[in-house]
Image (tube, rainbow, N blue to C red; front, side, top):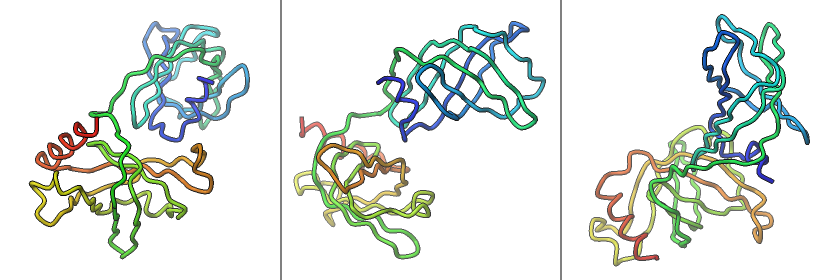
Amino acid sequence: MQQNILRDSNITKIYLIYVNTLGARKKESVKLRFMDKKECYFAASVPPNFSKPKRKIPAELHVYTTDGVYKTKVTLIDTNMSLEEVLYEVSIPKTWDYTQLRSSSRKLVKLPVIIKFNDGFEIEAETYDLATGGISFFSTQQISSIYRKISGILTLKLPKETLINFPDGQMTVETRFVREKSDVENHFGETLYIFKFINLLPEDDMVLKNFLIKLD
C-alpha cells in the first residue's frame, strides 16, 4: 500500500507544509510517531512563535529518501502542542508523486567487494547491484551500528575490460552505510545492505558509467 512509503527505512527527511492562521506558509521537519488505518501522527520540536493552524486544512507531505522525493496532498486534521513537541494529526496519503534523485540507474551485477574500517573490521561480499552512486549486497552477517555511522574504504574488483584506469585491477573509494532491507523476496535469512560512494573521482565515475552502459 502506498502509505507504507512512510515506513520505508531509507527515509532521510519528512516535511509537513501548510499555511498557518497568519497566512504564512510553514515547512516543518517532522518524524512519523505512529500511523493507523485513518490517520498519521507526526512529531516536531516546538518552533519559535508557533501559531496553531486551523483544523482540517489542506497540507502537503514531502518525503525525502536516498533514492528520490515523494510528494502528496493531505489534510491537517488537528494539532496538539506540549512543552516539548508539536503533534500533527494528518490524513492517510492516497497517492504519491515521485521524483528520482539517483544520478544513474542501478544494474544487477555480481562483483567482489571488500569494505575495510580503521579498526581492522572488514566486510567481504559480492555486489547485488551497482550504480555510480554506490552498491548493494546481501549478507548473513549483521553489521554493527558502529559501522553504520562511520565511513570505510571500499575496494571493488572490476572486469578486466573496464580496467583502463585501474592497473591493479580494482577501484578504491570511500563509502558509507545508507540503509538495509531484511524482507527481500527469495533471500531468507539475508539482509540487503546499501552503501554509497563518497568523493568518487571523476575518472572513476566515467569508468563506472561506461561499464554500466555495457550491461544494458
